[in-house]
Image (cartoon, rainbow over all chains, first blue to last red; front, side, top):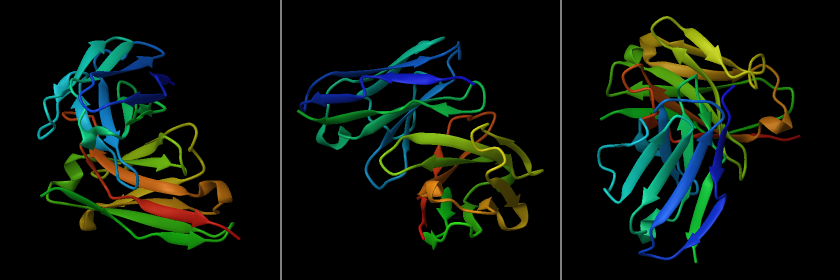
Length: 106
Length: 119
């Protein structure tokens, strides 16, 4: 099984901050990685797929990078709507989600 | 408009059986796999398994193999997740999501079904 880790587990930030979340895979997954945003009581929402492709309708302040085993999600200027939990997911071999990173208000 | 609509919340007792559903619309149901994802209270997302509705071929996460059954009825564009004997530890929100070989990420999700197992 491919294991996924994320850091940090919690991130406190202010509106306008640049935020970076890191995701690591236990073995190479090429670029088969997605990022999701989840708000309380809601289903996850796809933000980024294939490591760096922005899903249609997602604001351009979200970006993804990386390949192999290390990946990042960056929010260039945090907005009030962005306070949520973020999950990475590998789909190189079936599917595994990372443990999540909660972005809360500083 | 693509939609995955899940069945409503359930409250069950330990040992009871249950089947929850996920109905797809707005796309060719047999062109996308359906995966099921568990989220226990206050916890993260766990992939449980998937089904190809075109032929009902399934794959399960080792963590869930033998504990749940995933099935589908392509004639009514509906996938199912079922338990034969629920445990309190099955209390969670369950989501379905679609994906395929061209778009292997989960681009559309159901709204979730909350399953509560309590004596």
